[in-house]
Length: 229
Image (tube, rainbow, N blue to C red; front, side, top):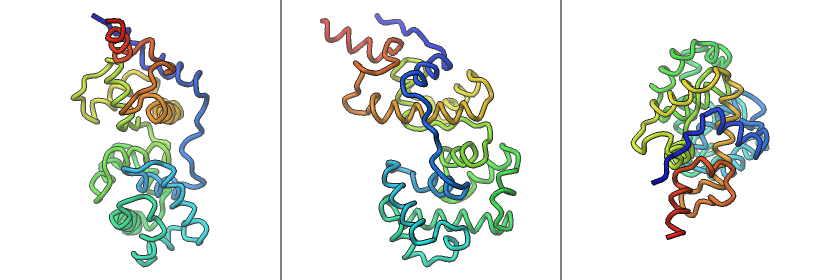
């Protein structure tokens, strides 16, 4: 029976960085663009978000006041590529309205809040879940929070490092307790895991043979053992 090697969390990071190089995440020229992207990417690939961001930029609408005051129908059309565009229109308007009411429309003031307090406030907003809140905190505010997503869970459950039933908070704690407290490292690590999950550790037909961390993966070893039988 295969015994997982339990490569340390930091070792996996180093292996991925060596294989893929720096990912230069999060793509965005401003804090507003990063936050808009974090909301729009819910349930959809980044290439769809890029189309919406481009539409907003080309029409001169990637601006706090412009987004807040835009007609819902127009905003929905501009972000149509992101799926659930009507819901995401409401989410964007809800977030921007809250920033106006709570922080006088000042994103810097919002992001200067203590991490735990701001995270709690974000999670109270309609349409903002843990992954979106943490993406805003880490990528727009440089707060010390590790962002986990479906790729993260898939990779580390397949490796045998965490149980299948692990929830978001426990998985996030697993990383934060086993990594140096550096926002830049959290940023790079999450981006590397997205790369691995999208191109190698796929939900269907994972590319284990070329995966840079397969040597420490329980899933890969079990597949190999089954093949030999």
